[in-house]
Amino acid sequence: MGNSADFTKVVIVSLIVLAFMQYRYGFETVVISSVVTTTMICFLGFIQVLGVELPSGIQLFSSFNEYHGRFEGPIGDANFFAVILVFNIPLALAQFLRSDKLYKVFCWGAAAALLLFGLLLTQSRGGILALCVALGILFFQLSRRQKLAAIVGFGIFLTSVSTFLGAEAFERLFTLVRLAETAQIDQSAEGRLASFQVAWKIFITHPWGGVGSGNFNIHYQDVALQSGLIFRGEGRSAHSLYLEVLAETGLVGLFLFLSILIVAALGIIGAYRFARAQGEDRLAMQIAAFGAGLSGYMAGMALLHDAFPRFLWIMIVLSVEAERIMRLRLASDKKAQRHLGKLRLTHELRTGLGRRSTG
Image (cartoon, rainbow, N blue to C red):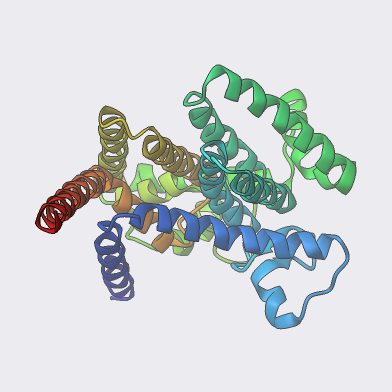
């Protein structure tokens, strides 16, 4: 019943957002709102790195974990906040690349830099891998000159940040290289692997319908102890959205979930192609950035469980309806242009008739 109530709330919010996005600049407004919000959170984190102590009420929006010092934003989860930043980084970069005025170039460039800085402060290895997926997709949308500029700019950014924060800030991220070289895992990776194995064993036992939504934590301890895996004092999550769906809802649930993701991808692709066919390159770039951000987010969720489902489902609903939103947007633009043309023609006719009567 609790899941049903939450789902109903998500549906209501999503429908309101969809209704709003049918307006002329609704898509841009949603994108700007998302990027500006996360940028302000990262700015507050940047101020704290400089040594400025924020009031406790404001610090709640950009908190650092008191034990391991990782940037957690307002949600208290560094890894999940990292994939939210991954979603927003391509959106900020698309605005930066399409800026036609100097102040816009500066503002969107600063926003992209702060978002990247915040991502590094989370020290999320999964977030870095997810960012590679998102930026890789966006990279193919750039011209040759933009690709070269992006590579140079990213190199300058990493050099500046490493000088500013020091090598110790990247110590946890460097474990990705050490893992690949030595095949040794740390405690965090060991815990995830244990969750993956338990999820797989639960799936084998209940292959079709799973053990029920939200029931992975209940089964973790028994299965882990039976298999001789790492013991945890409390229920563990699957630490993978896809394995979580597989264990809790079985093959049927996974098939439905992947079908929804495919429909969402087709919606973004259709919106992108439609915008390009209409000559709306700027809008097409924004759609591509949205798709790149969502792809990076979904890649990051391979290492994260569904702790905050509302954000995920709202983005999926927007993706499914993306092509329809673009058609409504461009149709309203054409209608407005025709109406404006009629007004100009009427004005010119009235002006001409007035001149003749005066003459």
